[in-house]
Image (tube, rainbow, N blue to C red; front, top):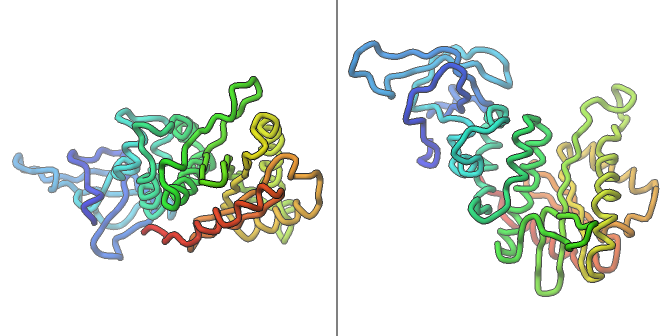
Length: 307
């Protein structure tokens, strides 16, 4: 266990969610675990290090055979310092579900949050999404944090802001991110379509429609009013996080080929991305303004994936 992740100063209670950071790989478990039994030394001089625990493991949905010593467990998600800073001092609804996420995912989110200043960046929207206690909504926060990290790694915090306000007009809409370079003013709205696990028509190669429906709503409800509110030189970009890259990528491509309407009336371009494997950002321009941003997003693939 690295010094970055430390066990709790107090014994865990039944019902607490933890992650295992054991020195031996055979005792590791990637998902969050719930404490179902607490074992302690009966000696009055016993310390917190003398506690051990029986754990129920999410992911495999069973009680683990071993008893785990206190020093090998960290509270989840509060044991990750940057996540803890984001959540704030008081417990919030949804954090127990967040804690059940896989340990590598929370480690990565903790790393991505190094790009965020919780004192100055507007993070309330993220907390509100976590409070909903829904996996898809928490993943939508992850998608935004992920893209923010790469943009700020490449262009710096001064050039990448959050929750940018387009105008003071009645139709004003906030976009998630704004990137200002010497040549472009780029407004980015991030969407993570809720992936339809059940394919259209049952099993087989049919494609669900939830991904493209989400994109369609985002373009019409947010980009439509924004297009009329911004200056002509502002570049509006939709960033689509693909939870399942191959299937959703095929679905998006098929939807584009249908040409239901002229997307350039709403968006100058969009970037699709996923965190599976190496960083993968694919940018597609729909207007001349959008074409000027090809190198901006291509540069993100040059950044090394944090571990």
